[in-house]
Length: 133
Image (tube, rainbow, N blue to C red; front, side, top):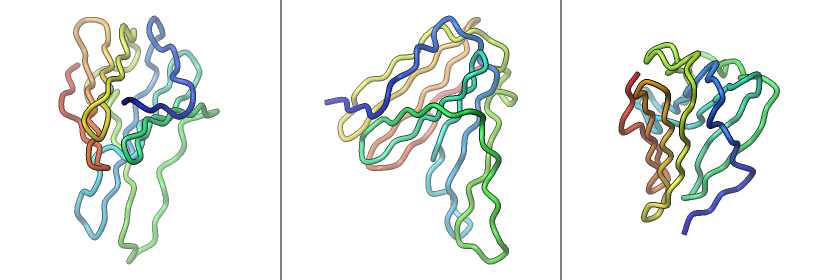
């Protein structure tokens, strides 16, 4: 059963201004490919993340700055600009589908001209399974 905490935004028909992925690394190894996804569309910023199979949506004022870490920290949270990397910025979002998976969820964002971002969350890990621009 799909569980959503927060209000899923209606992103279809809005222009993607930025798409930033915050990763989680521990001891120099990628532990969670998508710790948080920040989506900015038509001046609004949304935060998408998962925890124990639950999909969380939050609204924010702006995309936050990358986490500053100190030398010797075992964990880092680097940002990856997916919008720039895959030319998804300034493109119309044409679909947002959230589906249940066994012990998790799948989020599929569709963009004009065939762009896709598909996230899978299972066993408390989130990864990008497909992205095209």
